[in-house]
Length: 359
Image (cartoon, rainbow, N blue to C red; front, side, top):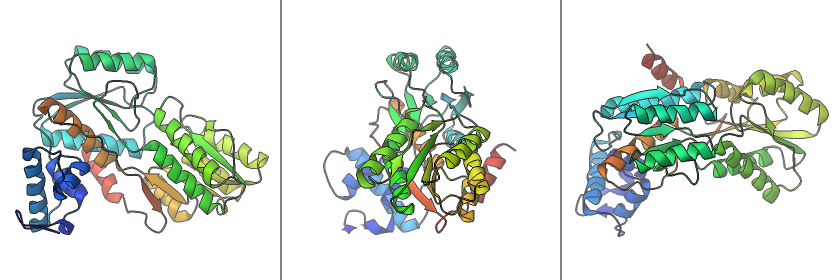
């Protein structure tokens, strides 16, 4: 389709690239390119200019966000350290540097309500312009977030949503849909029979609850001959997962599929290898890392449901920029990708970027 006003051919630039370059959502780009109402003239012009530049130059999108130079944002992440979390931190730092933003990392790699509440209090006392947080679903945390919102300080929840709290944006994938995707993979790979086990890191994060719900619902609807066992919660400790996985394999010889919603995959893999079950088990994990990539190539893990941390970090930062600029913040979700042995990406470049960030 050719737009006479700009000479832009739609297929030359992807909608996601145009959205990133223009600093708007993919839904806005779709409305502009298809000439549907509901987009301000200034925003529409920005979308068309981005589409024209990308089409004519063949370049990659440059993430555009409202001016945030001189702002200070606080970042609060939970859980255990790991490659996926490192990628998210690297993405946030990269975008902040490009925008002239100062980041304060607080509450990193903890998952306790008192510590997170204290970190929110400290951010407010130190004069923050916005908070990007991996929230714990708890009334105290909701109250702290709502207090920040009442003071016109935007809060973005990242990776996991915080319902009923006054956050301006959730940056992450649809975790329930991602769970359904994992359930479908388990059912098809295991040939629709036997028992299924679900491992999760922590019940504090709504993202894991939504993934579990998605897995169970899909299996119940589409694969009624698969019996889903009680969920196994052991934090992110591979040694603990190893012990529980060994016990599970001994007690349930008809176990044919496993899904791990968080970290700790090394322990499960070790148990499968020791019991000689790695090749006949349908094993679905979350988030592509160097370790899960190796497991895919070795055939221990069959599929990974992945979310792009670099894209999520851009989404979070852009939402805060739009808030301060008085621009609309439209709902958007990061896509959940299916990575298998046949299409696994080489992520060494991402690893090198992290190393360069830390010297």
